[in-house]
Length: 306
Image (cartoon, rainbow, N blue to C red; front, side):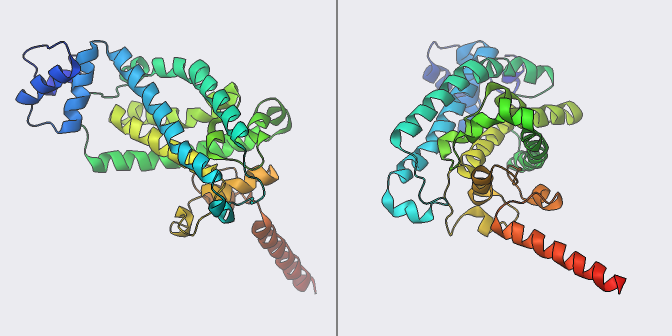
């Protein structure tokens, strides 16, 4: 708590959260409203591990199910069927509900204990959680780095998960839905949740251990971005305004939906470069390009032999 309040003064200690916020705001005009709300929460809780644990879990659930909800609604509106990648496979309400129940159970039984241990682990590694917050440019740079590192982790571990025994005993659960939908982004076995999810958590931990420069707020915003990416990639919809039309190396639903449909290839999470470099792109266009390259290579070899 001392580290948190080192740049936030509080002369008295009201009993209510809003009381603490009002009192803290009087003497900390150098802090913006979000920084005051943040500092007031930790002051109100009087237990940093509990404060971070509650905030982390509520944030994760609100973002995951909140971002999934628009896709649930879209699935029930016939107008959007024309944008569905696998147009004939619209998930039913009962399928969506069954998936949501299992995902929430996984969040409570598998992810909640890890979230609860996050604060002591993060602070032990040197992660900051006080105010003021870092500059937005610093936050953006860190998140960009984490995206690249996580995508690399995801590609290689996900590709390994498609090896026979690992696929059969671990990864197959995630492929229950050959036409994915938003809620199914974290529909997976506990082992897969921990192993693939490590890419999201380990990258920031290694970063702060190496540089000594990372704030928990950056970690939160990174997780929000990662959840948005994962849910949108599983949405099953391809729109004219989808991000990959403007950022060609972005993966998105068009990239990941083919992976679920064909059960192979397109292993990366956020970007396309690893699948391109390793020649693991999936789908008719990729197969055609691969065939043309092979034919060109054979023709070149035949010409050289003449």
